[in-house]
Image (cartoon, rainbow, N blue to C red; front, side, top):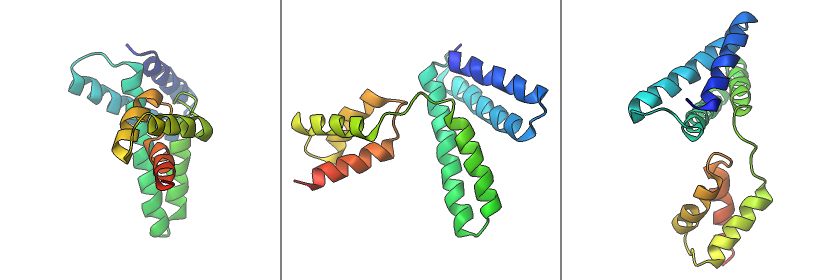
Length: 146
């Protein structure tokens, strides 16, 4: 079993003991998503699989934040923001924008002339440590200068 999954389970146990209902609900949801992913893959989860599940959870919450803000429901947006922040603590340290920009420039120098080629070369290097939208924005910026 993945070390990250085990960490999530121990955090869940701690939040239950502390009677922290919002955190308990959040962690139970993510653990459930991870278990569903395990069933889907028909194998034990790796840390990368669990990171993907957490990233999807964060992405869903960010989408909800946008919807709530458009609807003027700031209290619900704040709740989603807190959940996204709580999930982000389980992700590996994020890569700096400068490091991403250097990798994008290296991919372009290596012959990647369009956004798809750049993303194809850069994404695998930073799997689980960088947001695809951040890499995409830097790649568009760098390619736009041509």
